[in-house]
Image 1 (spheres, one colour):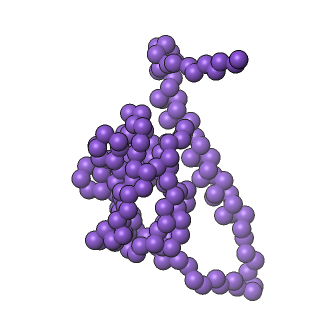
Image 2 (cartoon, rainbow, N blue to C red; image 1 turned 135 degrees about the horizontal axis):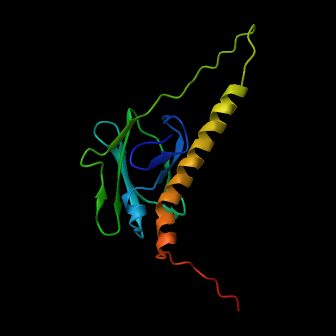
Amino acid sequence: MELTKNIFFNTDKLIENTTVKISYTGEFFQDESEKVSIHYGFGENWEGVTDLEMNKTELGFQAEIELNGVETFNFCFYNNEGKWDNNEGENYSFPLEKPQTELAVLEDEPVALGSVRKLRRSYLWSKKVRLAVYKIITYLPKLISGNYKRKIKNDN
């Protein structure tokens, strides 16, 4: 699920009492900050406020979060320099859905899982394409201008 300002979840829906992986490729990733943390809470009053340092990867800063709250998932980011990315003072807030407790299968109709697999596959491809476009836009001008420093491994 793509959110705003280069924030991605590894799932299509945010469901209460589940674990979600969040990826951040926003301002702090582009500025090459050393450390980024996510500050998050749940509900209108930000219950259970937690700060969690995110792992830096080639795909952005990432963290796994337990969605143990109700109603909404609220969060913002800050880096090691004390700067905040809080959606221009509005914070990021997304509704949490209740887990589905019923599974109804009609005897007369077959269950078609093929369409779900096709949707998931197309979602993954669209995510890969967006990441490739981001990398091309970011690194191609550096390669063309010669400002890109390539890391060379020394074999002893």
